[in-house]
Image 1: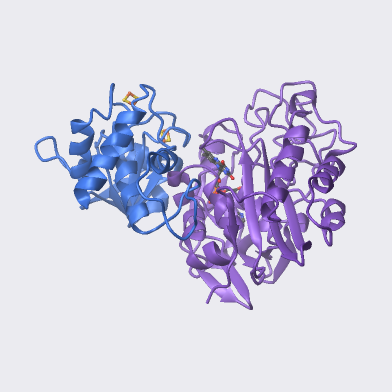
Image 2: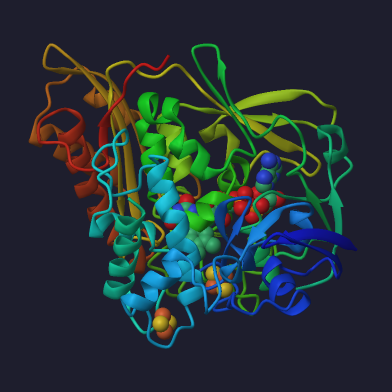
Length: 168
Length: 336
Ligand SMILES: Cc1cc2nc3c(=O)[nH]c(=O)nc-3n(C[C@H](O)[C@H](O)[C@H](O)COP(=O)(O)OP(=O)(O)OC[C@H]3O[C@@H](n4cnc5c(N)ncnc54)[C@H](O)[C@@H]3O)c2cc1C
Ligand code: FES
Ligand code: FES
């Protein structure tokens, strides 16, 4: 079957088996290997990308379901020479050790700032109508879908808080 | 994953032609990768127009089947009028999964029983008549109410518990195009000797919406989820409550319980005995004892009974004002 995806602004016409996940389309067919496969079951967040501006696990969705959609991957946020704000903040704060979870962490983190910006509450928000802001507890809850085997969590939260401050 | 045909439905009528519905895919694809689910045909319903909106209906709201869990929890009308639903959804899964998970798919997500997930083990839900490995197996996530000899599995949804406590109705469209509405307790089937049949939705049928009645004005609502870690884990038990007080007595009360039964659980006798009473620790203890009396679950899941009793008492204290409201307990307000 055929599917058209726009990844980081570039159009790709794919010919593929029905079973192709969005993750495998991005890595194996389009060749963008920044997005990682950890569990392939929605449990780790390593495969997080943005679909039409929302973060999702690319392993738990079919490429076929995204015909015409706009996808952003870690490569779309910046390059090694010109990193995006969240990428630079992870570098500055040592927000990683082995780096395997990092692309997913950064994709998730950049979406979290937008979700807080839109006033969307989380499980730990004391009120559903006004958000407590960028507290450590809010960041830990909102980032709980991204596991880090190296347990770089404190530095990851520091990196997100720094990027949020810089954006203000 | 086994090969399958993929078909995109553009209209509700074309769903009736058959095939397994895929919405967010976050549960179905997980299970297809494990070959627990092996559908011949997938029908992608994401392009069907009109199912992705929350609209006023009567004095309440109509939530289309494709509205995502994120959109429901963030909707200002839901946050104001039905805070227990927002809280239940936000207590489940992760931000990424809630962005993809849909209202219809969440209702029909399947159990997390480890024997259901393992095709090498006998499971009547996966293969009717094969036997139940949970009987005599290990099972701290199993149900404690509503089980049968054929199946001990619990329904894992948080959202469905929020919907039950709000007395929501599920709209199902039949293959002839006619729709019917069902309360949550009628929408889900208890396992009996056919645990593979989990709801009244037949092949070719589709959930089109969930309908919320008018918000319970002035109510205090709460969702309490107890789990192994603070986030991103399924409930061991959960309690949802909606209460209003008048002259120091409980005026209106609705209670629902999650991860303790094959469907979001309720017990009218327990709830009814509390209405009209003045809130009191002894009263709440007796209600909790009544809720679990006479049940002897699988030994590994027996801890759920005292956990549920304590969770219920704590929630009742909060929604009746006997103790201070913690995070997860909110006052409902009318919405414009
Ligand atoms: C790692 C992980 C953690 C999770 N944690 C939680 C948690 O803590 N709490 C919780 O409640 N849930 C949790 N979930 C489950 C999650 O909520 C469900 O996967 C999700 O809600 C399913 O929605 P979906 O749209 O993706 O469904 P799909 O996977 O698309 O479909 C699920 C089922 O519903 C059927 N279906 C879908 N839409 C319709 C319709 N409109 N009409 C008829 N049938 C339909 C499908 O045929 C399928 O059988 C978790 C999931 C994962 C992967
Ligand atoms: S690879 Fe997708 S969540 Fe782990
Ligand atoms: S940095 Fe190694 S898994 Fe996160």
